[in-house]
Amino acid sequence: MMENQQQNQQTLKGPVTISGVGLHTGSHVNMTLKPAMPGFGIKFQRIDLPDQPIVKADVDYVVDTARGTTLEHNGARVSTVEHILAALVGMGVDNVLIELNGPEIPIMDGSSMPFIEIIEEVGIQEQDAKKVYYSIDTNINYYDDVKKVEMVALPAIDYRITALIDFNSQVLGTQHANLKSLADFKKEIAPCRTFVFLHELEYLLANNLIKGGDINNAIVVVDKQMTEAELARLATAFGRDTISVQREGILNNAQLHFPNEPARHKLLDIVGDLALIGFPIKAHIIANRPGHASNVEFARKIKAYIKKNKHNKDVPIYDPNQPAIFDIRRIEKTLPHRYPMLLVDKIIELSDTRVVGIKNVTFNEHFFQGHFPGNPVMPGVLQCEALAQVGGILALNPLPDPENYDTYFLKIDNCKFKQKVLPGDTMILKMELLSPIRRGLVEMRGTVFIGNKVATEADMVAQIVKREGK
Image: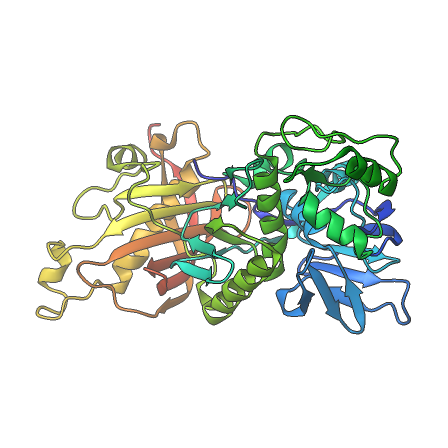
């Protein structure tokens, strides 16, 4: 099922503050999220430092991934950014300034849920600016032979993630988690807390590396036999009277929210770390044994790909295995065109503001008989006609009786032909509203793609007219 893609950028309705302790530094931190203008992105500001430097949430500024993701720029460092970034992505917040009076995001309970709650408390504001998604149109692979990490971004019509973990642990076993839509993030992923193996915890405690550590901000996986003396020592370290081990191999401070909560938290980390790409993407991410270091390197690779192919932003993904929203019979019920002038085979995407159609070009098209015989090229005017027909479906779709109306095109502007359309090509026809439909006037921008390359683009204005006698 296709995710309902957010159309416009979003920010917060007002400022909101949360306070807590940094896991690694032990510093008490006040963190305030503030609304920001469209295109601002996500940025951190260290208001406790001279000149209050700003650090953009960008993979280019990652300096450490040892026990979380740390950014540094302009002389300012911000640690453990992944959980707040995941919350912002999961809630669809694009533009926000995050003020901090310390070096680390507060750990809270080790999940993204406390941040989700304050975002919901203040509310989300839609902005008057489109949200531009970058479609991954080829497989992007990352592999770490030492850590046996595999990650791949596959072309998809939305953003989804599959994570698999295997730590050779009898307690955890092999786990996997799925996020089919960001709409499910709050319920399925946000509550999932970070986890740590007992042998790692003992090392961190012994070396004073988790000064803000508390038994309530992580799931502790007990991967060895514990003596009563060791349990007593651990209880003392965390200021508890007693600590015991549950049957599931988890310290008794925590009840798991999901049987695969560790795998879900790894997926949460992926959402947060890949936010550092700096662009919302459409792709299916599959990650085997991910960690912060591999997430960040993968984010670098995806960002480099997008920068190289930035002109391909928001190219529709055509998967012939997916059923059509409108097949040819439904198209014929909406449009008056018939052979040889019906130039749309199916509609694969349709919303209030955008439509994507498909036209398969074959050598048997009637116009190839006379248009450059021996060197067949689809006439540009017919490419515009195909766009116009797809635009007609977008214009008529909100009407309860579209079969009683026609669309007549009044104007075409800024028309450019950038690539020939030849027999065997599959035309991906995208039309987007430039403004709301008023008084039957429809302003649209159209693009013809062949693969991921733009073949034709034009701005069009049409008018919706009721048929005589209807």
